Length: 325
Image 1 (cartoon, rainbow, N blue to C red):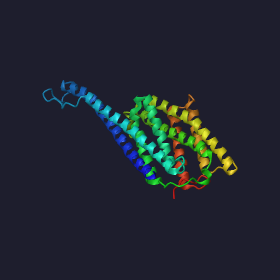
Image 2: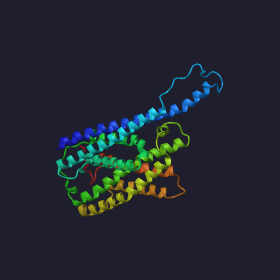
Image 3: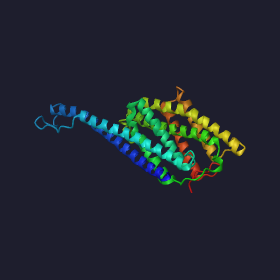
Image 4: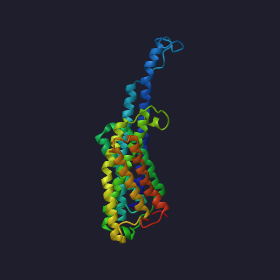
C-alpha cells in the first residue's frame, strides 16, 4: 500500500505538469489571437494607403493569419484539457493520501511530507470548487498548477520519508482536531496566495506597466475580480486558522503542561496570525490601498512557508518531528 501511494504521487505530479502545460498553451494561443486581432486592421489600413508610404502595397497583400475563431477554439480546448487534467491529478493526489493513511493506519499528517501533500490537496480541491462556481477564472489555473508541481515535487523528491509510527506527542485525539484545521486553513491560504500575486501583477499591467512580471498577467482576469477572490479566500480561512491555533494551545496544555511556550513553531504561527489579521484589517480600511493590503496577504503566506519549511529544518523544539534526517 505504501508503494502504491508513492506511485500515485508520481502520477499526480506528471498529471499536474500536463495540466500546467495545457494552461500554458491556452495562454499562448490567447496571446496569438490578440496579436492577430490587433495586427489585421493595421495591415488593412496600410494596404489601403493610410499612414504614409513605405507600407504594404495593395498589390502585395500581407500573409493571411489563421482566423481568430480557430485560435479561440484551440485555446478553449487546451483550457478544458487543463481543467480535466487538474481534476484527474486531484483524484490521484487524494488516492495517494488515502493509501498512505491506510498503510500507516493513521491520518496521513505525521510529518512534513504528509503535511505538504495534504495542504496541496486542499488547495487544489478548493481551486476546483472556485473554478466550478466561476469558470471565467480558468486562466489563473496556469499559476495554480505551477505551484502544485513545485510543492508536490518538492515533497516527493526532498521531504519524502518512509512510514513510521506517530511520535508520542501526536498520539491524541487533538491530533485530528488541531492538525486537520491547520491543514485546511493552510490549503486555503495556499490557494489565496495565487490570486493575490495575480492581482498584484494584473493591477500593475492595468496601470500601464509592461515590464516583467506584469506582462505575465496580460491574459488573467481583471484585477478587481482577483482582489475580491483573494479577500474571500482569506476571510474564509482566517477563522479556521484562529481555531487551529487555539486548539493547539489547548493540546499543548494537555501534553506539556503549558498552553504557550514560544516554541519556534508556536512563535511563527503567532506571526502568521498577526500578519493575516493585519491583512484583513487593512482590507477593511478604506484609506488603505488594495495593493498594499494584498502585499500583507503575500507576506502572510511567506510566514506560513517559513513555519512549515524553515522551522522544521533549521530549528529544534517541541514540534521538531517533521521527519527529515
